[in-house]
Amino acid sequence: MFEGKYGQPRLGAILFSDFVKDTYLPWARVNKRTWRNDEDIAAVLISAFKGKALREINPLDIERFKLDRRKSITERGTARSASSVNSELSILSGIFRLAVNCEQAGSNPRSRVKLFKVDNQTFRYLTWDEETALLLVLDNPTLKAADQIHKAILKVWSEERARLRDAILIAIGTGLRRSEQLRLKPLHCDFASGVIQVTLSKTYRNRKVPMSTDVRAILRRLCVGKDRAAYLFANPQTGKPYKDFKTGFSRACADAGIEGLSWKDLRATFATRLGEAGYNAFEIAALLGHSDIKTTQRYVRVEPRIHEAVNATMSSNRRLKLA
Image 1 (spheres, rainbow, N blue to C red):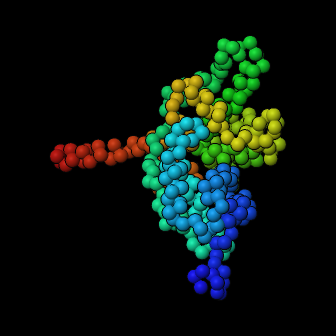
Image 2: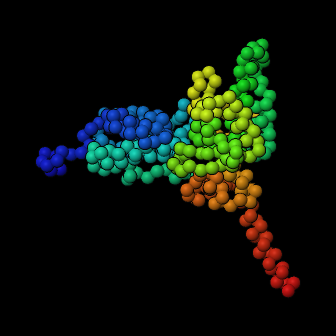
Image 3: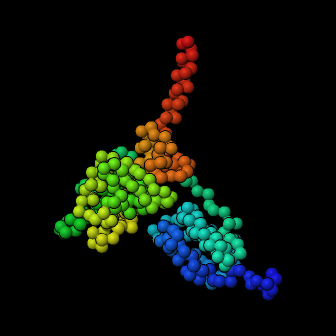
């Protein structure tokens, strides 16, 4: 019976690569908004477990994969981070969970392999001085001396940086996720109420984000002449929405002398400035669209009221002495 000679045949006879290509990826395209990321990671997993059936992959194989990936070097020549490997292991676990649900595997071997411990408490956000330097670079784009003669190149460069400037200010002023911002359309901008209607969010919960004066002015300008269903951040050459701001943002940060800043940190900047203004975690969570307050606490870098609380204990002591 153990060898599958009697009763039902043993589960997991299908090749891992075949299940991923024929079942998991089609499922991910329908059910996951991050399916493009899944496709990239699936290619890595298929290569790592090439030729193996689902039932032939055991926890030891996954431990070896985990350690080998941690030691590997990325395309940029840097050491692969523990969080990147954890993301790959999470997708692997998702593949096996689907296989078990589809009765193509008997168990999930990844569940017996621990993820790397990582520090999720990142402390990076855009300071006011960095914001000033970044906007200065975006307002005054320059090219290398060899390219100065090409006025057409400078014009395109200036237009790209102007679009990036708008995107950065909206990110800082609203705290929208990158995917939410890239999907913005005129129909989401309610200028009468002064709010942005955020739909199809990561948590599948719609929410309203108020517009500041600056954000409102930018959005009004971006909506002029556009169809209500058109994307506000669309490539002018293709008409399709941008997939990311990564390349232009990295270059702008380098020109401004800003290091270690990612696009996600702009969302953290929004949350941090709310915390500095005295708003509590529950209010910030509502604006960020978080369902778990613990998630919000990772974004709020500064809690100025804890200093006031400590000082208040000393004040009460002084009042008792006076009495």
